[in-house]
Image (cartoon, rainbow, N blue to C red; front, side):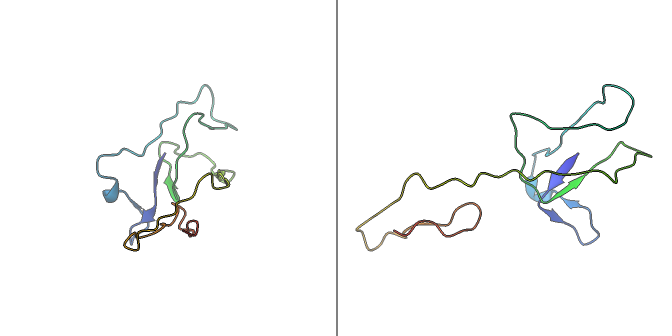
Length: 100
């Protein structure tokens, strides 16, 4: 399984921006392909699109990606009396940061 944030014009995963990062997870089935749950622990991937290869003939109609997030309360703030300070930035989600 490969993952990316953007698709190319023809619908392929756009991975040029990943430079040398593989952005790939491999999985070897323990037995006959059937109902299998792949839920890695100890890692979280942020992506919008995924590409799956190596499952020729498999029925992927039940394939499901589970959104995982952390809606955490802010633990700290920033205040600065210097008028040249750019102030607070936005969070990684794009939401406005705390008022400074």
